[in-house]
Length: 296
Image (cartoon, rainbow, N blue to C red; front, top):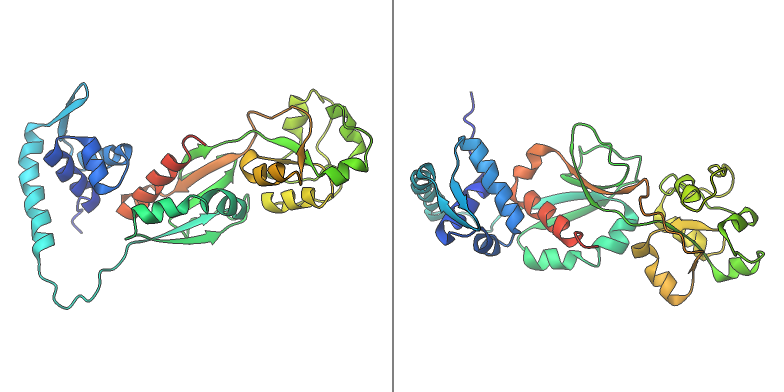
């Protein structure tokens, strides 16, 4: 039977926290968040079946077991670090494959990914596009960003953020219609359809209790293309602030009414298999994503 070994990234987190007697300083040294460091310590404590630290308010200290285990960990890490490898020409860079929807990639990740690559130049990030609601396999990636209801069985699912949905149209399209004074006036308009942004919850928030989901007209199951259809004057669509803010600022589209669906049916989630997070580069990327989108 193969011997199960403790994860190396958890050992280094333990050694750094013990050396600094501080989770915060150790996290800064390792270029991860304090919560990610705490996660690694808990992972190691679960592995050894013992508490490594005791907590007293905001201070920490090594447990009796932790003091004894620290000597072993330091010796093991020193052996790995000092072992000569004269024929190794270059270090193998850790790599993470991320699958994500195209609109999220374009509008939300691209403006932020430079922060991750500057903090962690040693990690290679590979981005692949997926179709929301359809591509539901993790077989080709380490981490996925999914836009949906969050019902993904047998995998770890953590919400990144959600934004209110609201109705938009182009000024040129509005000129072709009677004045839009209330949501009920949308009966004069073409409602653009998408499985990602269903109209029914917005109808209910707007007081249109008897309205049903549109069944005719253009359907687009990509949020970026849906917004393009609105911009080109094909009808009224639902969108989110971070996707539409540039078009809104330029006046290419305008928000209709003052109704925003605060609890839309779909949100963004990061999903992954439990075992994959034991890889330090994956744990680092997930922690960075959670921190980057915490206050969006």
